[in-house]
Image (tube, protein in one colour):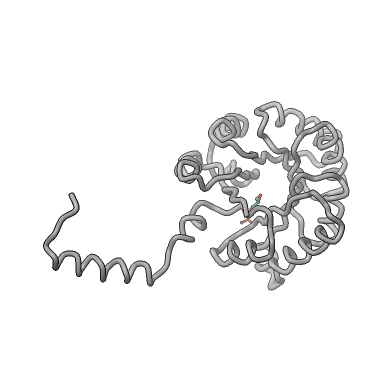
Length: 217
Ligand code: E4P
């Protein structure tokens, strides 16, 4: 499973990228707002740093303006992936952009039917939102499993990009469900390294090492 980092925080992306943990980046208008940065400037900076796709989201609601925005965003860098909402206008924009060779991430997907439409419109990625479904007492991960099954049934090329990831369990479950990509906040990716038995084992090793009186350096 590929790891995308879900942030517009340059320092956090750089740290994970230097560790080889970043296969791509996703942003959205809320994350741009949180960064306090100029949208195009920060998108260019991220795209220059990262080898993989960097999702940048349109904000228009009608297809014509959305398409114009998408073309504009795609000019920022060759690895910009235009993010469009899963609306009828978004699907139209997706079809036109992907036909022209631009990568498109169709976002705000909450059902298998929506994911089917995204695939039919030639989406490069579809982003089902796990956490926001879980917030409503629905099963976000079940959606990932179902989309995987449907896409495999018909050999669709669209990649499943699990989004709205809130916990390390979401990462494990997305991988088990066969998600192609998971996009997670930097903190969730860092937490994947944590285990209390690792900490306890380390403490015990260090205590015994101290008793030997030896030094490595
Ligand atoms: C990424 O593409 C999505 O915009 C993001 O994962 C949404 O996450 P949230 O539901 O935590 O805002």
